[in-house]
Length: 335
Image 1 (cartoon, rainbow, N blue to C red):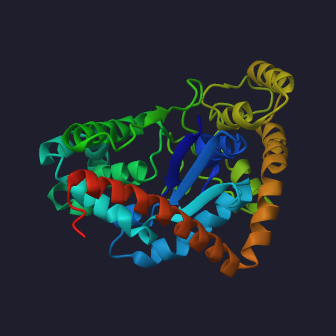
Image 2 (cartoon, rainbow, N blue to C red; image 1 turned 180 degrees about the vertical axis):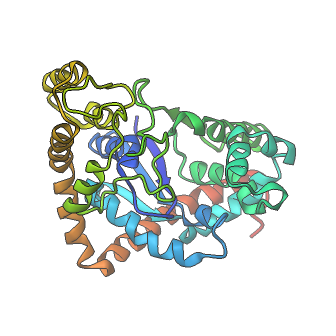
């Protein structure tokens, strides 16, 4: 049985190491399995729900996200990479699903509540942002995705999609496919920012981006949060909460050497500069090939747009077929 997988990103900025370890590497692994069919969406419509007055931000980052996709190894000959706004069927499906969901149910969605509070919308929350769980249901069901990679904080969004699928199928007949969540491994938490903040983001200026040059990566690593009490090289240092060791645990391949460095750091005699230089080497081994591919693709942005256009055309055919089934089931395929 072929698994149909839908995932994607909002084009509000370049993708960083948090995206890479949290989802991008997994997508490349999924792509390698011939039993998987991947649809990866650049969610520009969703990004506009809270950036409607700054569409230039979305336009600019559309190609940046696409470049990051291609750079990490997502292959348009194996994976359908498409732009959400170029699939009009998604908006029509959203309209039909909205009639199956109450305002109260959307308001109770924990993810929506948390994001409204985080963005400090108050009573001024844009309607499009408020109902985006329903829009996500349209995105997922349009491609009959049975697997959707999500983080723990996004589980309520997928649960709402499952409810919409049940409601539609119970009302109109078995048309939609119920998706299941693909959760990250238990030991894979969110990669923190280089400043120790639990969230890596552009607004906080604490991220290492896939597009960063080697010099920029070096500067960011050298500024990383370590142990503020480890003032002198001979002082014992704390590994827990030290971002250099956190990143080495994620990206380092030589686990025996990392264990030795930790022990040395704890007993004293190992300076921050030395472990930071080691981390720079580790990150460069991972990022240099990605950076090279990104630079090659960036030489011809027209071709990148062609890839997005071709993927969107392919995706629209799939969504159109689902929409046709939906309208027939609802009894509104009049002509």
